[in-house]
Length: 218
Ligand code: CO
Image 1 (cartoon, protein in one colour):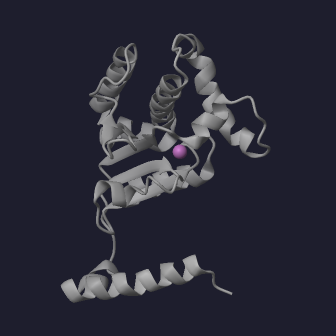
Image 2 (cartoon, rainbow, N blue to C red):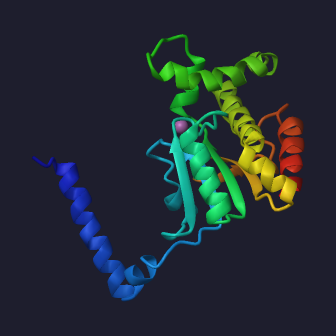
C-alpha cells in the first residue's frame, strides 16, 4: 500500500510534468534526445542539498554523484565509473566537490559512537581528521571545528579526485576539467567557494592555495 508521502510524490510529479508541458510543449521530447551537462557534481546524499534545486539548474545541466559526506575514496568503482563517463563521454568542463556545513556524516565521524557498517565509510573522514588534528584541535568551539572539518574534507576529496587515473590522464593531455571546492550553508542558502573565501580564521591560506593550485590545472 502506498503511504501518504508516496501518493504526494506521484501527484506532484503529474502536476510538474503537466506544468512543464504547458509552458514548453517540446520540453520532454527535447529532454529525451540526450544530455550535455557541463559539470559533474559530487555531493552529499543529505536531502537538504539537492544540487539541481540549490543551483537552480534545469534537468540535463548537472551530472551528479552523491554519497554520504561527498567522499571520493581512491578505490570507489562506482565513483570512478561516473568520473570516467563524465569526463570521457560527456566531456564535462567542471568537477564540483559539493560539501555542506552541518553534515551528519562529518558529525558522526567526529563522535566516539560506533554506528556499525557505516563507520568503514566514515573512516575516510577520520583520515582527514588525523591529517589535520593539530589544526582541528586548536579550534575550541565544537560547531566551528565541525565546519572546519567539512571544509577540509572537501579539499581532501578534491585531492583524491586529482589522483584518479582518469583525471591524471586528462592532465597529461592538457584538457583536465576545472575542479571547484564548494560548501553549501543552510543558514544563508548560499554556496561558499573555498578557493575564494575565508570563513574561519586560520583556514584561509591552506584552502586558498589549494584551490588556486587546482584551478590552475583546469
Ligand atoms: Co552531509
